Length: 294
Image (cartoon, rainbow, N blue to C red; front, side):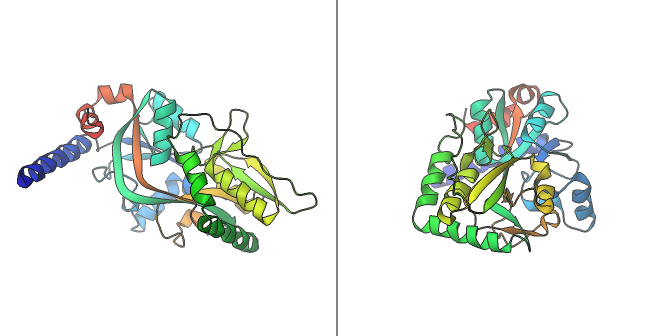
């Protein structure tokens, strides 16, 4: 009996690999311009022997013939799928779940390698050292007293199935003001309301830390692709970030000069999303059935 179950699992795994690999060559992948890495920067790293495929973002079957297109915002990337400029989005699991729940045109088409994504706050190295230390200590304290877990449950539960209210920041007259960059591009973690107010887990974590530190928060709205320059120029003191690794001390070229906080959320997978229309038109249909057990 056990041997039969093992054989069945082996066959299903083989079919998943074949189904995914059948579309792997030449796939046009959309990816948010995280950590300041551009298409040119990725190509430079590749020539230096650091392959982007080694970052574990892509499924094992995606290969060197794929094309990567970087986008400064989530909205522009979604529009590119509808316009036929790219085939799929590659985003963290929690954001994939959010999009699927709010946008009936999308479905998960392929699961990336199991790989940790650490969501952290970024501070400018040097000028932001003291601020980094204070907020880091606040996050650690929030982990110890259970506050962080409550916030994670609040924003991580069935993402995209409810309305998210704007985060409220306490006011402390005469206190220091810290500028927080919010992109809205990684919901429900980095999220904005329809009237561009800060929402989501990242802002909630900063609001709680600021309350404990008794500092004021001023929100600066930016696209994901502008986070690095926003931090470097001093337009913002804190940015919401994520690393495709578990060791937050390890920094990619595009993130040099950035200090990371302790992670306030960790995800397990990267998802590939395609529109239902594209899934139906391609040989992903059988893979999608297996993936979703339908």
